[in-house]
Image (cartoon, rainbow, N blue to C red; front, top):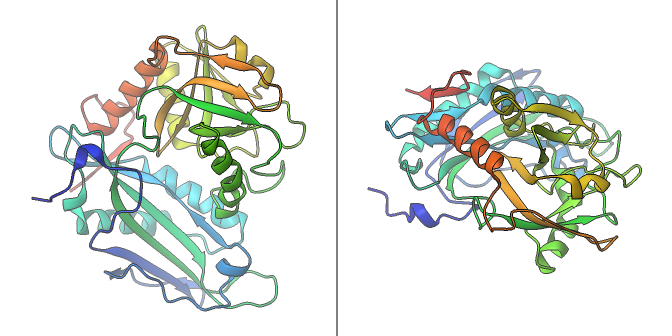
Length: 339
């Protein structure tokens, strides 16, 4: 039995036994390799180090009440990594290879999949990097795809409890026609300084304004923003927002619950009109937002005045977690059971 405090796991790196790797060389992908090393032997002129040829994914595997391990919507992660690879001109991993690697790494580290009932999961981090040397600005001819895993708890330490966030306008996460819509490291590098400042000022995360005009909501830090207004589920439609697989799933669940789905630009000025607001993503699932402070305008918007998440956010969260953990019927066919 693993001596791990499953209930109090942070969202952070946790050393496990194995990772899996596959190289793209001479125009083709090789065999999947198993490694117990936490390190990569990388050329000092690799394009990932110099020109940002890098993309990654975040996904989770859950142990259900029935003891079975489920991986949630992995084919959507494969598609998103493929779009990211195309966006920064890397070799595109086939879905079959992606699926083989995540299945293998889960089986190799099965003892690290948290038991049901602790609110924890096994986090998977597929990583694709330019591994070949180039000094001129051009794509590599060699790539490395690897997947490592580790058990994690909630992304925000509060878990499914309201957090405070800050709207900012003096930093941009991504340009209107840049790389905001794909999952590459540069977007996150651009967010580090404002996120650090926001945390020092007492906020769980920051909400970025649209970089072109500062009028609309972009991302909620490392997650998508959504709002509930009456019978409407509202979330930003923007080329600089990463298409969240969690958000996509919540929209489907919300639609089937009878809500109207509004995928559209969401103005900062609307924040006072919403009944519930939240951030959603693989890491957070749903993080309800209890207060938003506009750092530029000084306005304060408050939600969850009784200190608990709103009723619709709660229903959405419970339904999605129920599907992921196998306590609700997977009517959408989103889970893959690891045999």
